[in-house]
Length: 304
Image 1 (cartoon, helix red, strand yellow):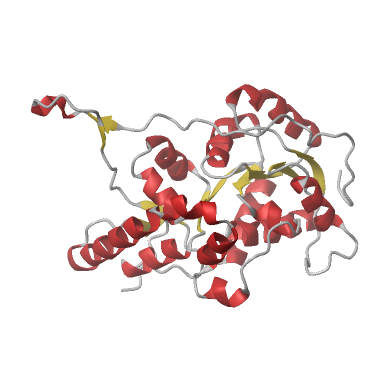
Image 2 (cartoon, helix red, strand yellow):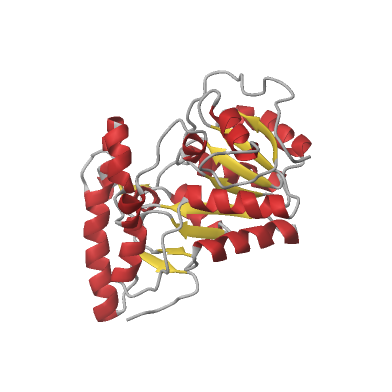
């Protein structure tokens, strides 16, 4: 498979896409203290580690996972995911098991640097996806686009494989696309389609955290495949959603641009003030007392 992409069947015409329940969160009961109250969440304060790599290094490492046949999950970590992992052991576990973890959010880079860890740059899901698609295509590996709204994956596939893709200076080999659903009862059909395509790179656009849990649940049935949760990246590649201007991305303000386009995201943004406060406190404690930071790096690059 490879070259230009043409749909062989209306594989995107699946039923309505919906969310998937995450693993049960860890709680402790206050009944032990003699108070018959509802359970309360116990935050897990252990740090989460990212790979301190540039975009090029991250793409090269992911391609090596494809070529070696090891495969693996790539997590693009942002502050919302960090805060969720503090109360959701399933999210924490999949981040810890991931083959690669990028500092997708500017807040993640900032938090690590506050604690003295050297993060060379922010590596977003869309930037990594574009770079890896091109590198994989150059080595003869096909990609599979899974998820997004109706028609988006098809439009993204056409943009990625068009002879003259305009502003997208990318070439990719798209084996197939499938809208699919993140619910476990649909996993077998989706996995079978990916198997049949022969793709070795899988971009999953179910939105977070559904896409991360889907990958963690199904990657064992897809040996040798590298899978990345890319959120709204396919919408951007397809031209359905504009990306923030370059200056806003450089300033770490892409979240603000997306909020202006999608005001409904404001609920997700509520995690940011709590994350910022934790980052400041944990960063100071790490530098002064050596206690664990909220975000660390896997190779322990240290800059203080």
